[in-house]
Length: 263
Length: 150
Image (cartoon, rainbow over all chains, first blue to last red; front, side, top):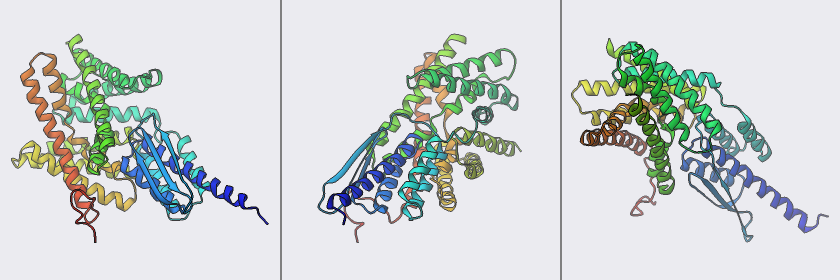
């Protein structure tokens, strides 16, 4: 015969586990650039699928709160996580989405879901870092042409964008200050663009500089800010918008610095 | 002919952007194709004599609608497709000239460029909003009156 307390601890342990798994899923999604409403919806669905009632989740850009009722008549559980890093890796968001879909559909147990989420955290970014640099180069070169440069400007813009991207990644590893890496990358990118044009590679200076900066544009926070504001998450929307604005301003100051020194 | 070259360049550029944002592999090419479509709509709108803002709204709206449909089909978050889709519209050039005018001390011109930049960014947002409202039909959130309740 099992004493009453064993059953209670087992239930408490399960609730604790589900809480951890839900918050882990939310933390990954928020860190790697999901919209706030998606984070809240995913967590609520997962907790409800695990059989808990009175599920409430509140999330802003920097933290997640989750509370649910384990059993009718017992006290509610409540926990929060703080999210410090914000990166862009839409693949991880997609994979967490997939895990939550399978968990909600009943194809995964809590333990399996936790293992899958931990694999997602451990996984490296799906494209190697050199491919990301090449990607920025292609994007930068392409946009310099689209914004009115000649076909000949593709090449200097490609190299300037690669330099900007390398600087961004390198500085990010050393400096804890947010936005400093964008400023440095914009400075390095536009300086090299000016240097290339001065050396006779490429003709339209402005377009080459713009091309080298395009890969730094904060596309994810910008789009998410719009989406969050529209779904009524005003707090999260405003903070995302401010993040995007500050990033754009630090890019602008980086270019302004380079332009006023070297031109 | 120029347009064709531009479309090819857009495809490559958005593919590059997809790699920067680490878009899932199965969505990479679809995102780039949506970007190509966006650029095409923008240019056709400008050729037809529409203003920059209106063509941007049209391009962003159609891109977001396609992104929603495709995201449902291959079951990924819609951001992985809509961000590459609207990237060709980002007013990077206008933002740069805003900055340049301010640096050179030409504040009036800077303000003019700045307003244009804001308008174009607003137009992108407007297109996204319109597409979103199409796809959230009958899933309304309470805003002022409880009319949605059955």
